[in-house]
Image 1: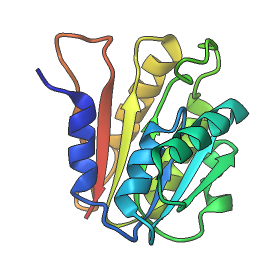
Image 2: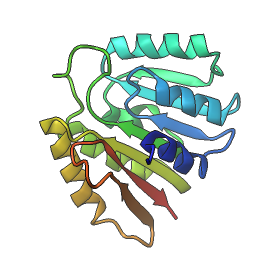
Image 3: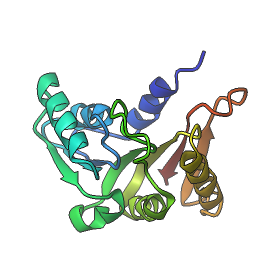
Length: 184
């Protein structure tokens, strides 16, 4: 059976190298932040965003316990404000839309109103041969609507500049899926 998390990492590793600048747009509990930190190494930079202080605390603890390189900046702000913090081109960005896992607060989710400007800003910051990965969780109403909005937006992009693919388990429509946007 297809393991979507392994597939995500496979695509990311095709683009990211040591020394790159990358962004975790939805840090949550820090799993993607750790993956990015280890991948870009001591000479790279990782910016990670979340609106919940609890996410920053959880991520910081996870990174420290895992012995991650100290190459990260944790930012308590909405991901749509990325350009206020990140001034250089990025090689990769990751979004895991939805709510903070294990928080017990499923009502605090990413929202279309900030996700769309964040994705646009991420694409603007993306360097040549960069990649943007957006994981969508359609099992709740806002997640389903975010996924529809992103599919419609990505379909409008010029494929000669950015190639967008969607990876989904077809016979499990409520399962998470993801988009990758690769800049040529």
